[in-house]
Every structure is written in C-alpha cells, then in structure tokens.
Image 1 (tube, rainbow, N blue to C red):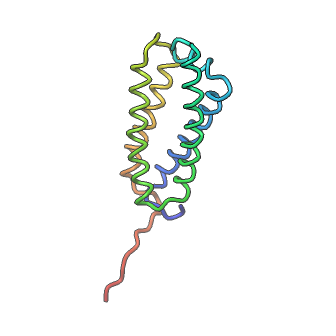
Image 2 (image 1 turned 60 degrees about the vertical axis):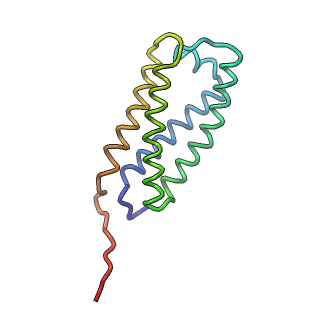
Image 3 (image 1 turned 30 degrees about the vertical axis):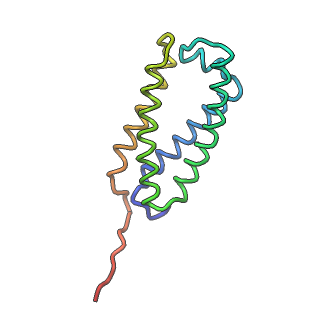
Length: 138
C-alpha cells in the first residue's frame, strides 16, 4: 500500500512470507531432511506431520503475501500482531521440541524470535512519506 503507516511492517511480512514458502517447499519435498536438521527423531509419523505442516505453510505464506500487499491498515495491524504471537510460538516450540539441540534448531529459534522482534520494532514506526488524512471541519 502506497500510503500506509505500516510500510516497514509490511516488508517484514513479505519477507516472512518468502521464508515460510521456502520452508513449505522443503517440508513438502524432503521432510526427513528438515526433521534431522532440527534434531528430531525421524519416524513415519513425524515425516507425515511435517509434510502436513508444509501444506499449512503454503496457505499461510500466500495469506501473508496477500495481506501485506492489499489489506487496509487496521486489518494489517491485527494480522501483524498475530504474527508476533505466531513467531514467538514457533520459536518457543522449536526450542522445546524433543530431540537433540542442533545448529539447525537454533537457526529456526533465531528466525522465529527475529521476526517477532522485527514486527515489534517496526509496528510503532511511522513510515517515511506517510501522510495522515486530515478532515477539514469548517
């Protein structure tokens, strides 16, 4: 949106959408590699669960891309606040997941926490060039 107060947060959401889309692709193509990367025990049930998660991430990444480009500011703000909770939740659940602690796990904990921080930093910032609409009362 050209005149959006949340220009920077919208960029964060677009980048998050790309990260989710890449993760979805990996989960759909080779979920066992992802399971090993984050240090979980690979079994048929875990592979199936992560493949299902990949399908959900396709929908979420598409929704994030659409919301970041076309939603009005109030709707976008609510979606961005929800993504703060989702990002923190993914980071915490990845950290608490059973299995061994690997570099891959720490990367994903960092990505989740990083996106939550980026949303929290960018949401209060008024975008450069943003013009508030003033109503003329006379």
